[in-house]
Length: 175
Image (cartoon, rainbow, N blue to C red; front, side, top):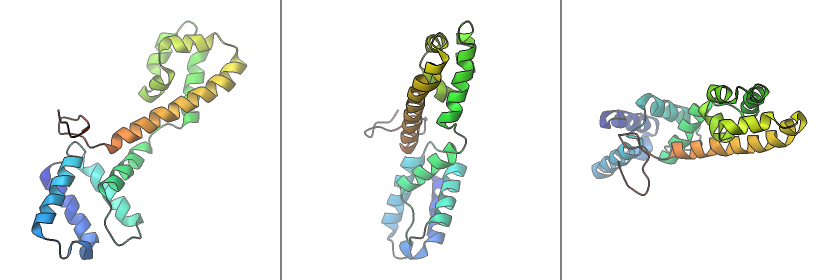
């Protein structure tokens, strides 16, 4: 988001919560703009605006959402298109049925999140060689747990601010 887009988002918050910003000194407003610029520099303005609108519509509190709340809402908006662990396992289960000989091709067909939870193409082959009742019970349970962990890591990563070059800020270091 550019500085102008950040100011537009903050103007939206000011319109929605006029009493909160009513007596705020200009220096504090500038500090807020700078902080929001830093935290949303690598984000799409439409996504941030959508998240802010969703929070304005759903919050009963009389104060504006925090940066963390906006980040969390962005994660929810993005997660709407994510697979559930059951859907992800269905893809893996199907891939293991052709995994004995076509395991590499089947692995490449999987979405990135699912690939991360599976690990390697060779893992698909190993599962294809196991008894199906074991794969559909023990392996399915372990995969679903791994997949949820992958999704959780991605959601946590989405909450971190991006720099303008697209890298996440960690300990104040920029690219």
